[in-house]
Image (cartoon, rainbow, N blue to C red; front, side, top):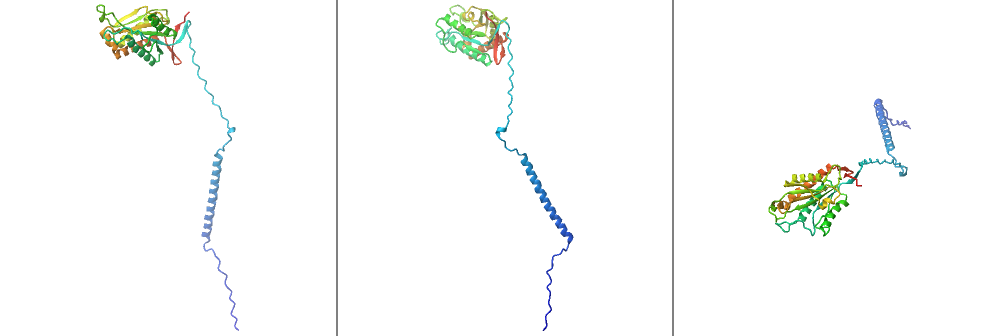
Length: 303
């Protein structure tokens, strides 16, 4: 019997490196890639940690210390040195519209509905407004069609008392003049006059006459009306006021040219502006000054 020879199976062939150099290069690239990934991850982690370190953790409000801000001390207002024998008083101009109510004043001979009381109230209101526009405190003795007393003497005295009670700095009374047409040539009389009465001095070296002169010149400058001069007269409102006072006779209602002026809005306005500009010059001359936003004057102290 023939026994077949025993054949031994060859073991399966194992992998072998064909190119050792290429294999080593691949391994190096692999390890370099792994290393780069590890380094990048570590860097990112450090950055996150740093960012977290920069974020302020909320703190308990009770532990917050607030530094108080010091309030600046305001500068003290400089004290006013009042000269010896003087008093310091706020400026006030009292503007008096003559007549009113039952007392019409002069009446037009050309229009029986045209009265002095209405004309002068209109001018007085304009004077008050323009003074206030300039920052000069002013008030009217009357702001409507009324009188203070049926007695003319007492009515006039009340006007002066209003100025005295309010410690006025200056007083101006506004009127319309007239001439008795029974007299020959009366209708030709026209123009403006300003009356004054020198009293005890309230402001050093300043007189009522000077007050009248300044205001008269300004009215002429504004209106161009004929000027009949300043005149001293012991009229009630001039005699009984305790401050410089004047009475302005704006024009003659009995003269046709002046009558037209008195009816004119332009003339009334210019007369008011002349009075106001005159008063402004007077205040400058008597030394009015501003203190804490208000005008003041020094007056002679009474005994």
